[in-house]
Image 1 (cartoon, rainbow, N blue to C red):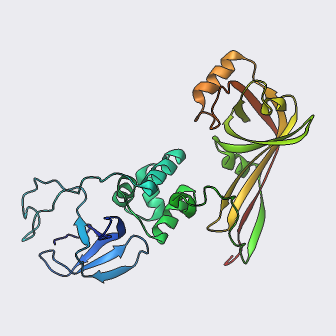
Image 2: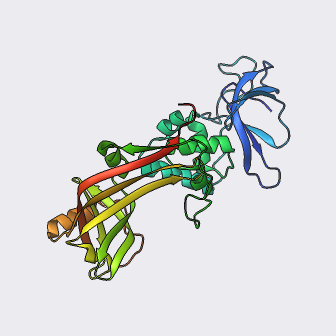
Image 3: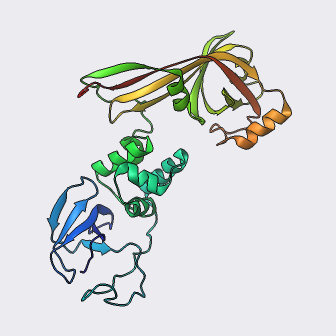
Length: 300
């Protein structure tokens, strides 16, 4: 085994080939690049002296197979090319989807997480099992949660974690609320119908200061037109026992202009998850916007 500073040491499960741990080689103890190595582990940031075993190998990002041995590195062997991608695993697909939803580049996410861009790219394109610390840093960089990146808890209601020992509940100003609403997502539409209170989760967009969503003509949600409604969006981080919620209150109206409806169709980030012919657009003009956030008061 040979390595250079900046290479990546990968330790895999001997039975499945899944990455169990990896880190950047930051120090050599022999001029010929043989072990042991000083490795900064991606999951903890700690640097330790490592004598790689048979379950470990070295990746040399960015090198080509036709590099001339020793060129630019006296008495050192040529680096081999990076191993071809073995196919993204579930975590890699969730990372890529979360990054694209946020519109973030690879370098930006890596910078936020304090990781090498090559490492984040590797996670997105290979079957890997990064440690808890790595996933927590990536979740924070992507504005998501450890549980979501792991794919757990999809069928459980959020908020089942333990409450913080020292929680702080703060009000959000209008600007913060608008930022959190962002441009699209899933929110809850609430209004009082002739049959009583109703609440529906809907895929929504934000355009020209209004919340807009699609529904089927004649559906129960379509009855919200010409009513005062409440529209709520929230985020719960079970791993950190933190979260926020934003509530918009205003008048709901049907979008009747065909050209406006066409523009909304073209600009929509996603089709309604519920499927079906949901061709009627409704818009909520926000008259009141409030929000609250729960964080930890510890250390402040």
